[in-house]
Length: 221
Image (cartoon, rainbow, N blue to C red):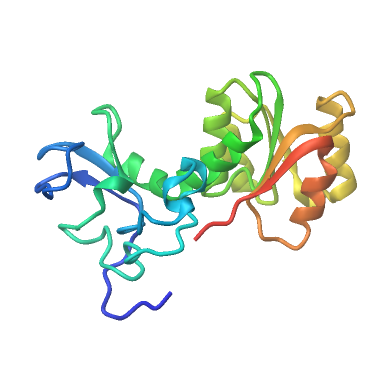
C-alpha cells in the first residue's frame, strides 16, 4: 500500500482527544474516542458520501493510519475526526481499539444479513479474532449462533463468548453439515459469515446455509 518506512504501526486506535482541529465540531478536548484507519477521504465520490456500510471503499484518500501514515502505537496520533466516534466511559481503550477494524468488519457482515431475533447465524472461523467478536454481537441481537472452527482453543473461546452450538470442522464437511442441519430443522443456517481463508471454508459455508439463505465473506487486514 505504498508504505514508506519508518512508519508507526497499528490501525486500531482509541484514546483521549488532546487537540481539536478548526473544522471539528463533534469532539472536545478530553473526549474518549475510537478512530478508524482512513485519513481524509475526498468527499467527492459517491462512496465517500453514500451509505455508511459502503464507505470503506473510498477511491481517493490521503492515507491509512498505521499503513501509510503513523498509527496508533504512537503516544500522540493525528486522526480524521470524520472517522471517529465517542466511547462510553464503561468501555476501556483496550476493549474498544480492536473494534476499529476487526469489530466493524464482522459487524458489517452481520448487519447485511439483516436477521431477526432467534434466527440462526453460522460463523466459519467462529473462534478467531473476528469470529469471537461476531459471536458476541450476534448474541446481543438475540440470534442463535453456530460457531464452526478447526482448533480446540478456538472452539473453547467460541463457547466462552456465548455460541449456542460448536461444530468442529476437522470432522469433515459431511459431519459439519449434519450437525448444522440437526439444530436448524434440516434447513441449514439462515445466514452464514465466512471469516476463514482455509481452502475448504467457502464450500462448508455454502453447504451449511439454507436455500436462499445469505452468505457473506469478510475480508480483513
